[in-house]
Image (cartoon, rainbow, N blue to C red; front, side):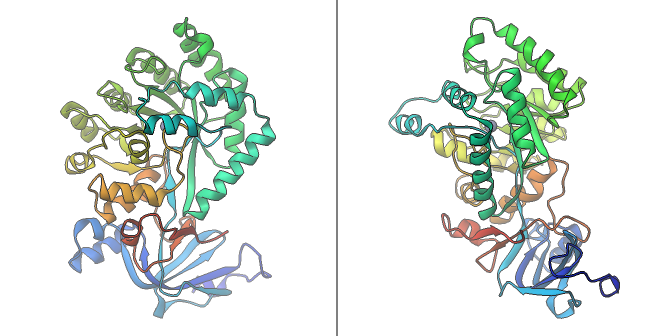
Length: 411
Ligand SMILES: [Zn+2]
């Protein structure tokens, strides 16, 4: 077979093949294995995970080259047993704000003591980030990326949004691009304090020279906006529409922070304009749910935010039952959710959002991957973005909350 015929390089050669075997439960998210699960009587949510028991897989040149029962595994240059553990697609954290300096632990403590969140604290992080050198920001970002991988995340989207000036936004986008290809321009995170008296001038800057520079430098694949008319700091429907239309005309994909702090226009705007994702979706009415169900826009839920702000959780069941595509991500940021843990998000989604363990895992892998143009599955030809659980089954992610079970398997 092809594997046996492939040239064998010296140890460490990227063309060397690696057999990973003794996988107690392999989650593939692959429809090919899903249909086998369905005919074996699994419920639809579990079948969709495309489980293979007592499995093995071969990785070659960074991609999956073979999958199947361990008893049928081909020879490879080297072999690694995971001793009955579960292997899953690496988590795809499709919503983070990882490039920032400073923290807001004091603001968190005040909020837990009763102070309401309104987005105003973002200015604190903007000041700290503008004041940090490239080297300082790079060191912080590198440490956060390592923290993500230790918890099983292999793909991450990173937004700018703590620069809010031409030079600082471009700087944050450049730093983000050093660690991920999935970079989002969030110049419209909030209106910076120096523009508070002239919001229109800031929207003109974001949609004009700032966007032009981002596009000219190829600095981002997406544009995002914090559409929240109830916050004095975030953007109205009209402002958000102008920003998204400008980004779309410039060839960027659209992402939206919508309906986080209360009912609002963000979700419907995202669906109308063809955004790949609208994130938060905490306060939805029936028109919002219908718009999501009829659109290709994914509803990305970020329940770590509700945990950290004591807001009510989004109604995931209503979305799933309406046929909406749902994703899960952390929103890792220093203000409203300073966790990088996708397993924690999955545990919240199961306990508080009433998703099944299978639905939550799918949403945190294939669901979030879809918003980045990826598949989030383990299949022949796909990148070998794998995570291993120190547990026999994916159910343990929610069953054993707070226990560090997941880690990136390779590299
Ligand atoms: Zn966010």
